[in-house]
Amino acid sequence: EADIYQTPRYLVIGTGKKITLECSQTMGHDKMYWYQQDPGMELHLIHYSYGVNSTEKGDLSSESTVSRIRTEHFPLTLESARPSHTSQYLCASMGQGASPLHFGNGTRLTVT
Amino acid sequence: KQEVTQIPAALSVPEGENLVLNCSFTDSAIYNLQWFRQDPGKGLTSLLLIQSSQREQTSGRLNASLDKSSGRSTLYIAASQPGDSATYLCAVPGGGGTSYGKLTFGQGTILTVHP
Image 1 (cartoon, rainbow over the protein chains, first blue to last red):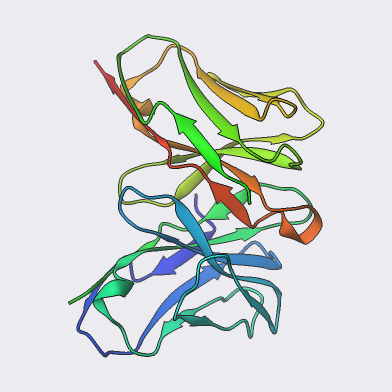
Image 2: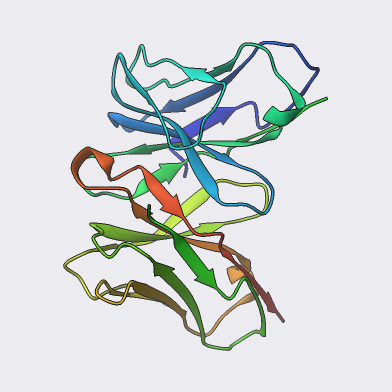
């Protein structure tokens, strides 16, 4: 029933590679978010967007970057992956007002 | 800086038990509080969202209460089932308006319900 999609689900990649994690939602939500979750740890906000051409950094410092060229699409890019980037990355979106946050299934990234 | 704490960290119960998960937050000036469920290797599913003006919300066997003044919320699960096994997370937004989606999460309670 998820209306927010993340690809790939799993990614194993070598150090130094450039990667892009995809996130798309079909709900027309203006607000979108990227959270990072290390195993057994809390989620931390790394990027957010309130609409097209709007992006901001979250509370947790991240070497990744994001873009928001279309409402439905909010990709996250790592220019040069490192083992410290190994984590689960969760994309989310929210409708108007104080509505629930909808999450994708996440991308589990492993950098070797 | 908002901090969210969940107790217990893990809970294992036999099927059929009623149980309570606890969440506390340090800054009581919240606009709402959400409870989520996370299955292993998956994203989060929103279970209940309580606005700051509400005292509780119910969905099926789930009931969440909110006491803003004391900085606490509880999630009550009635007649637990093995399918309820998951990690339960509570989260509060960093502010109002456009900050509603910028959530601070607790570390979660890992629930195991055995047959």
